[in-house]
Image (cartoon, rainbow, N blue to C red; front, side, top):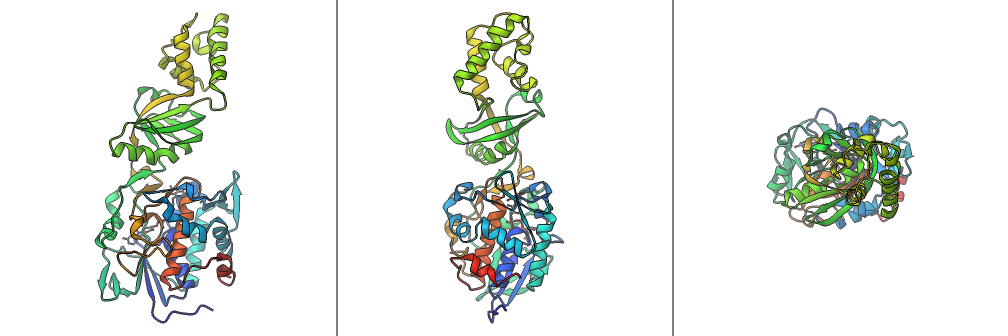
Length: 425
Ligand SMILES: Cc1cc2nc3c(=O)[nH]c(=O)nc-3n(C[C@H](O)[C@H](O)[C@H](O)COP(=O)(O)OP(=O)(O)OC[C@H]3O[C@@H](n4cnc5c(N)ncnc54)[C@H](O)[C@@H]3O)c2cc1C
């Protein structure tokens, strides 16, 4: 039995991942009325497209180092109080059986993202959360209350997400809303998207997939590196490692830096081993009457071999001895292939937006605004972005939990297990 807080009406702007979580926890905390304003005609629409329709909703390898922003330490409290184990336990309680894939990636056993949004909606409805399918255009303060779409609330949780994945970014008014409340929005960049690079050769390797190590350098300084399967497109690099590093590319370019992507195509070999491999092929196999390209068969995808030979000054169709300078250049291109980054794909391709409400203006232990008492935040509207792998949804659940419970007037328990035990049966 939830004890109702006599007068604590909570209005939420956005019924996505963080909004649904925040509403459920606000109701569980005893708020007298919880109303979600959602611009679309159903709640949780974005969740349905996550994880390629399967919804990678958390990750068993949880650590604050997977989060970025101007002050990434901001996320620590919420992630600590409501972690991946709490997410799994909470979702099991509302009907979503968790399944771990590829070591640590957590999905619903149904492998249907729509089951996650449905379970959240059903739990919210069961807890008497009300839905109003209207866009919020303004938040007005009247004495101690806030007015949203002609309704009065004691507390407001802003959980309207970002314009990631939207065709027209002008359809999104979330940043404008928070600015009217006096909050600063940090610079915004597309994140978790494809990297665009200079060079005509990308057209030749369009569609090629290869395991490699990718590094991003900004004005020569290493920003981050990732290993995994790269997918080349006719304009640059896609695949998980490119997604993970895209925010550094977007940020670097936007701040006028020279950004380079550096690829090691043979990350499991030492440079000496690569040198021996190149010698075996271009000083050995070449004597069997093979062309340079034919000597490279079986090392990398043939389209990549062709491009890398060309870029090393070696004619792929040529036969006969190759000078050591060209062989050294090929070793260099195989292990430290450097290409200039011209940018990233735009927001319509991005899974998340890096940047958002300046987290120095928000209390990390409640998610309440330090500028406007009674205003709370959750999810992607804040300047917190996670890497690929369930980290962004985990942030939505964690920040939703802290904001919802705090807005309801409850302090955040040290042990979430106790809190969840008697609820959501
Ligand atoms: C294609 C894709 C795949 C993804 N896959 C994954 C994944 O597998 N794992 C993972 O962790 N993350 C994934 N993400 C990221 C994740 O979906 C988001 O980080 C997460 O949904 C953010 O939650 P949120 O509540 O902040 O925003 P959202 O889920 O976007 O919800 C915000 C809601 O607010 C509403 N809204 C906006 N403005 C207003 C307004 N003015 N008035 C009323 N309502 C408003 C919107 O309509 C929306 O429903 C993916 C993202 C995309 C685009």
